[in-house]
Image 1 (tube, helix red, strand yellow):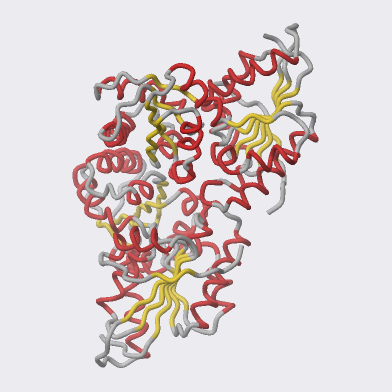
Image 2 (tube, chains in turn cyan, green):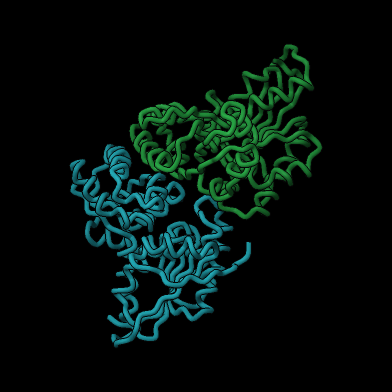
Length: 269
Length: 269
């Protein structure tokens, strides 16, 4: 579907949310995308709920004031801890990354067992477990703190990443037999093939469901209702609150294409 | 030497500085140690110099007001970016972790080539390179972002840690032939044996010099002058600004003994 003229704001604490933008671009062409990475204040995971909500609300308002008609919270921590505050602070529809992937798992494996791979902060919030329980899914959560630094090192294809996955997945599968494995971190789509093949190697038939893709599909469906399909040119503009060079360099790995220009933004302390 | 009655304050943004305390305890028995881990506000590495200096000064003043007569900044980021501000804000001697290890390398390998392993933030500050250059040492710096999460996972003995070290050290040794390898992060002493044997495996004869030990030796020497050696009971008290349970659990790995009690401290936002 095409959505000419429609402006979609995508927010993350860093680069990871670019994996969501990557899935949105081919699904909703013709739209204007604004991406904001609050890189100066990451990681959100180690901050208090009050601080996370304040940061996320500032970013949401920035995107709305720059024309966003739909807001995507492509950040697991903010989706887990600040979605209510963000929704209360803007007048546009807001989609987080947790609900769509849990909904996708529920549609495909109703009443199934799922395994959620995520950062320590996301696991500690139990946001996925709560969302799964609300739909009758039993969720095991596994914190995988090494996966983000491995992806950020650009080591997606290194054998060492497979070794780390083998350790984490063997530990996780000792406690559950999941029908689906949910990737609860926006960095993980970059190693989704390695996760899927490691699961197979360990004898698991679980299907890998990626939150970036599930979120993009959910947004495509909600926008299809409000915007008729016509042609137009897709554009995207990136803002970062810290080093724009680093954002362009690291971010292009997540987006899967080069980022020609990043604008520096000061949201304050 | 013993230093009865002497109070030594040790500050770090987290647990890592406990490797410095671990080296101090046997060297200066009979002293009273107060350790402050500003865990609520870590990592310091991603924050601005102004913010790091403000946080570090608050912690330094807390330790001084609780009786510290000597202050150890067992945090590479604060040692690199805020030592001047800390020294200006307290009336007691202050020792950082960078100067002692560089001094130790210089004594053993004057005019030698050294390799510094550190976090990305420390490498970006070039604090070691500057300190080395001031003593006529040529320093190569290698950022090793995966080592902290590997140590924090408790994977010091996992083969995967050796694999990661092999990748980092092979890359680093392609550009230099060091006489000494400086461990520029307080987490690294926990994998010092693995670093030493990986260097040997890669054909390097470099000596590993650990900043925790070098710092403890420097403090022992400076205190020997001011405090005569007599008997006494060593005590230590830990303060953390976030989860005291997590501090006691993770911290005991770094200290090498159990931490019976940790007090929660609120230093504000």
